[in-house]
Amino acid sequence: MNVTNPITTLKPAASLAFPAILRKPFLLACLFLVAFLPLGGSLLRWKGLPPGYGAFPPPRVAPPPGLDTRYLVVFSLVALGLCLYLGAPRLFGFKAPVRVAPAKAGPLPAWFAPGVAVMGVSWGLMWFGSGLLARFSFVPLWWGFIYALDGLVYARTNGRSIVGSRKHEMLILALVSVVGWYLFEYLNYFALGNWYYPHAHLLTPFGNVVWYTLSYTTIWPACFEWYMLLMTFPAIRRRWADGPKIALSRGLMAASLMTGLALLFLMGRFPYPMFWALWVGSLLVIMGGLKVAGFWTPFDAMAQGDWSRFSVMALATLLNGLCWEVWNYGSQAFRNGVPSNPNFWGYDVPYVNVIHLFSEMPLLGYFGYLCFGLLVWVVWVAIAHLVDLEPDFAHQEVMAAVQAATSSENLPAKAG
Image (cartoon, rainbow, N blue to C red):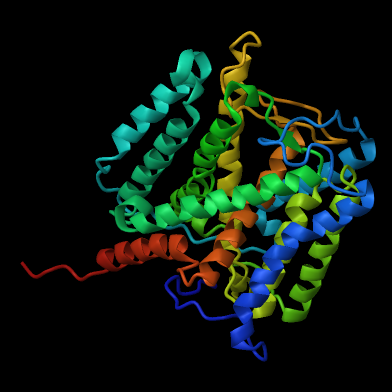
């Protein structure tokens, strides 16, 4: 089985002739282009800014186009391929992982029970409560959930978790989360509102800015906690660790970068047909920019056949998305149409907005969370490289615990 050393020093990938002094400016320029290319397309489409631009949080602009069987078939085939990749990786050339017993779990930390309690109380308030406590339940619900997840990670790694050993990373993740989600809220204007917030009237305009900013702090921390938790399970950690060896060349990533830029421009020009480019285009630009500049990315290990990092992050974000959607749906469904949750969101996804299972999100939309998981990864990696942080800290933290557990199990018994 091809298993690479999990604790490695991150080295720039394929940096070759790219001038070191230009690497960060180049990456920063790529991030700016993610924001400005849709604006260029929008200027052609609308001779100005798109409808609804600047209203915060983004309102519903107009009903999108209805069902289109062509889009439905294409996206269904993509979804089927993703299901096969996640459910049967051996069909794609991955070798069956060697079965390894999970490390013995340690005690739960002090913050686990309070996290569960805050999450549970906030959940009840969001779905069935009233007044200000119900209105402001979203942030404590999610931070309680984050601390509960972290407690599970802590127990399963014998003390290595974000709260347990990297508290500063939690704060940084929260700040990156705010920056990252504001970027996507901005891009959403040019897609004419793939999602929208119908209950903004529950707060003042200033209150919306403050409350939504606090709400946005939860996105990246929750996804990374899910990632670290899933990586503590050997069957998941090794599921995509021994597959096809594919090196992503700089030329291929340059093509990815240019394709992503074109998609984002076209999204601004043709918002409904290109609604999906909000996620795919952004991913291709940031991923391509990182690789062209010679920075490490979660995709580099594909050259050794290890696809686990981005595969597990995609799965982690899908699981997190299920929680988002269920809690969001319930905050409205049990209230007889009386709004109480200012964070409640709906979807105006064109062409495929069908089949809703206890969720505002259409069924096919859940597969977008897989792509969003990769975006969460690369946005974090890009910002980490720009400000000289550890881009792979979550993976290395879990793998250090795995390596420590393995080493302790292999120690020779002491003589009696």
